[in-house]
Length: 135
Image (tube, rainbow, N blue to C red; front, side, top):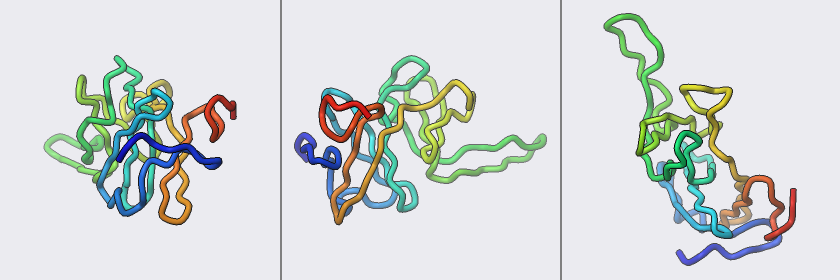
């Protein structure tokens, strides 16, 4: 898809049919790289920058993770909800943007996602739906 178009409700990034469950789309909005993810039918969008070293985090793998467990036990959890940074492996919960390592300090920049009809609209964090307008 070409560059997102701007509407009064946000930036049109794609149609719902372009983003099936498990898919991701990385787009440029006003010069900011943003990853849009369909996690079990819910849409989430984040600024494509890891808080650790500014890596393009949205290009990382999506999977689950192992929860704390006993010796010789493996508790695989959060299937298809964990985004792993491609540079250093930091893990983030795609439903909250929080780091699984440091929930107080490590968080992805979350964008607002709205679906109107079959249009997926994204607004950058700290901005209104129109360019240059503060939230």
